[in-house]
Picture (tube, rainbow, N blue to C red):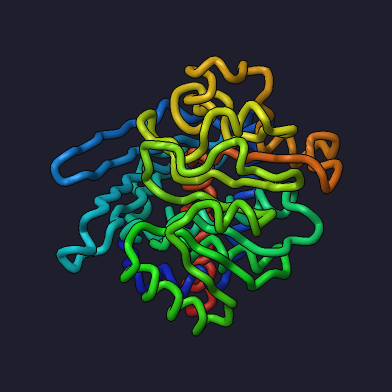
Amino acid sequence: MTKIVNLDEIKIILEKINPIEIIEEGFVAYSQGKVEIPPVGEMIFTEPPGECHIKYGFIKEDDYFVIKVATGFYDNPKINLPAFDGLMLLFSQKTGQLLSVLLDEGHLTNIRTASAGAIAAKYMAPKKVKRIGVFGAGTHGRLQPIYLQKVLDCKDIITWGTNQEELDIYEKDMIELGFNVQTTQNPEDITSSCNLIVTCTPSKEPLIFADQIRKGTHITAIGSDTPEKQELDSAIIKKADRLIVDSIEQCMSRGECFKAMNDGMIKKEKMIELGQMIMDKSFQRQSEEEITVIDLTGVAIQDIQIAKAVWKAINRNIEQII
């Protein structure tokens, strides 16, 4: 019988697993060629602005395959609805049976994205992070600093946004979580004071430019997950001493690297996959002077790993009860 798991149950289960560890293992398996992932399915809407992503795949010779549907409708908060929704479907790779419907309302997607940001910083951030700069005061703008605490010691953040009311609420909430927070509507306040920057907005135009980026800065770019979106000036991608991507194949059609290639700033050969970087220290940051960029477009292996982990944790709980 298919087990339906709601968001409240999923949040309790997540406390018992380490998503950073399991997603890191997934990136390695992906770069080793052990994962089958078809092209992303997506629908883009204009009135109101929104999108629906369908990501799916499986690890070869594994027990499961996963189909994830996630939506983002960015005007929803104006009508008191969450910006994100979605679910994950977990099937048996042996029989094709639907084992579980994870009604996560987009939460697992957000957590796996936050985990990827932490993995990026774990390997590529400067040894001493002076201040974390965040572009975006929404869900990802909150989760990124929280998950970064798992891999580095810095609670000083400055966050950019376009809506002062949203920034004021963000500041209050993050201070309550123990962060030292400043907000701004001027991007240069971030680029001039931070050596770790995370961009997590749905912007379709660059928010920061190459001449603003100082030596020793690391940037994790998260928001650009469709062909239309762009948060970084393409010259930043060219300027980077190290350019890491979650999926070379996927970044050929979306993300910051896709834009930079279209602009003639880089060639495919400059990109190194995150899983390969994890396995090979020579691809990791080598000095405090390097400018490094990680382009995260969101890969189905993250969804596969987190859905599997939740399902296995559910089964462990059932076995303990029995």
